[in-house]
Structure formats: structure tokens, C-alpha cells
Image (cartoon, rainbow, N blue to C red; front, side, top):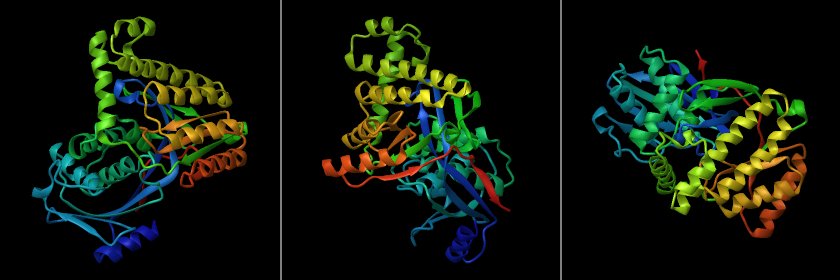
Length: 377
């Protein structure tokens, strides 16, 4: 906290009024189900984005990263969807959304720093947006509950930045608690904190940042979402979450691509529900095969994997991991490995990368951690 506050003072010439932190997230299981009104099971990472902020009386916004000397600055009239590019679009979009919602928000000076790897599918953008929503609302006297912060942060990404994401990432950042995974019904927004303590079961969660160029271009993600919406309309259901006869649904769809998308979403929802049952009954090791089945489905039916990701999954499984899968939106990013053989899995993955000529991956272990919070004062 002191470091980011000091960086704020160096950048803007005075001290911040407050400091907030929001974590990245990793999704244990439940991928591409959130925008189909289904079930998800993420948890917050110990790696966080920290934001120091102060209000401004002139309505302007100044944003700076602790890793750069560049400052983004704009007036209220300059904040419009599509008008701001790069990472500054997220905090700029917060002010636009809060004003659109009729909240009394003025100007803002903001400095952020982060230990969340960017471009790795660990939701650094959601952490940035959530932290900025908390800061801006608090500085102008608005009290928001965590679920409302998540909703507003999602709106920033949807309506200002133009990313048609669901609410998984923002909810995980805001609502997670230490030692638990967040079971969430994205239709009703009901949540349950499900105990998840891998070390107690002799397990670790190994996160592999594949360092693959993150190919989550908006067109691919949006296409997957549109295909699910087309399939739901063709099947006469509000969302794919409502498909209860998978063989019948597949037989009713003439398009093979739509059949694959539906098969993934319906089966993935079932995997989430089974994983929750296992965690509730203290059997986390048995979640491993569900992770692997999820990866196969994401690779073959949803077609969002890439060679670097598949190599990491295969290498971890060959070293004895209980399960492994791609996590996040796909097209690059991270792999999550549930294992009691961290060193063996890490060696196997690094060796496989060298043999394939891939850039070395970054690996770290993660424990389910606390959600977003105010650090100071």
C-alpha cells in the first residue's frame, strides 16, 4: 500500500485519498457458461491490482500505471465508447458508466500497479475495472455492495470497451473469499462459498502462464457467444443452460458447429455441478478428471485452445497430475493443474516446451484468496 501511495504522490504531486486492491481470478471449472446463464466456479488469486486514487474538482480524469511514465488525461466530454484505446479505456469507462447510471461522480486521479500477469487470461482487466469502480464510488460518497460493483464493472467492458464478456470475472474479483471457490449461478446471481483447500488434501493448484500470444481477439469470443445465442433460438430455450435433453438438442440442430458448441456448454454446466458436489463432500482430488474433460471439450467442441496450451496440459497429465485444463476465454492464456506432484509437472511442462521450441512458460502455485477490498484508509 505504501509503495503505490508513494508512486501516486510522485506522479501527481500530492497524496491519494484512498487505496484499493482487486485480485485476478482463475476459473477452476465452468468456461463459456456465464453468458449462457449457466454455472461457474472461479476463485480469486493472491495476485492483485492496487489502485491509489483522489477526487478532482474539475471533472477531468488522469490515469497512470506504476510501470510507465505515460499519463492518460481526458475531460468529461472526451469519455465516450470507442474514444479511448488501450488499458486506459477501463478506468475511463468507469467514469462514463457511473455518470450514465446517474451517480454523483466527478474527476479522478488514479495510479495503478499490479502483480497480475497481463494477457494471460487471469482477468487483470476485471481487477482494474473493479478497483476503479470502488475508488470512484467511494470518493464521491456512494456505497455499493460487491455485487453492484461487479455489475457496473461488467457494463464498462460491455458498453464502453466493447468486449461482450459475461459477469464471471468481475464477480470472482469482488465476491471471492479466502479458502473457497465461488459457486455462482449467473442467471439468478446466487452465490455459494464452497470450501476449497488444496493443501489440506495434499494438493496444489499450479498455474501455467503459457506465454502464448493471447489470441482472444474480440471477433472469436463474440462469434462463440453469437453461435450459442443462435443455437438457443433454434432450440426454443431462453439460454443453453435450459437444455435438459442433450441428445435431443443435438439431433434437432442441423449445423455441426452449433452442435459442438451446445455439447460443450451443456456438459460443462454438468461438470461444474459435479465439482461443487465433490468439494462440498471434501473430495477435491476427484475434481481432477473433470478438469481434464473440460479441457478436451474446450479443445474439440468449443475450439478455443492453442498448441502451447495443449502441450502444457498433456505434459502435466503425463507427469501424474490429477487434472489439467485451459482456463479463461481461451486462444492462449493459462492452464490450471491440480496435482500433488508440482515439481514433476513443472519439469515435464518446461521440457515439452523446449522440445516444441516454445518460449519458456511462467509457473506459479495459487491458493484461493480474498476478494477486492479497500486497503487505506
